[in-house]
Image 1 (cartoon, rainbow, N blue to C red):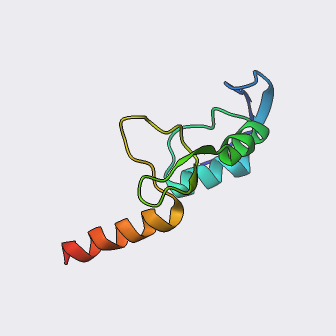
Image 2 (image 1 turned 135 degrees about the vertical axis):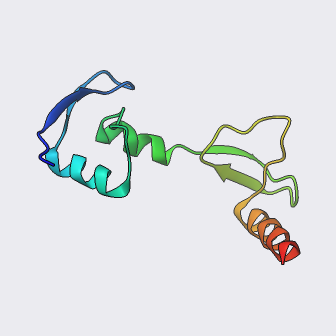
Length: 92
């Protein structure tokens, strides 16, 4: 399939950006059916965002890439890894 560069508009900042033929080919190879909604700068900034909270297990500060919900426990990376390992150990 032949791809052509497309000009898209970022839903975050409103700037126009190029979705190149090479990027389209990469997306297709990965099985992605949707085109990017954000420009490279906004995608990068979004990946770096982190939110702070207190770990429900150890009480240390926890930084996560999503906005924590008050009705759900938040865990630091170490406690989350331990909890996940325990859960996976119980599945065997």
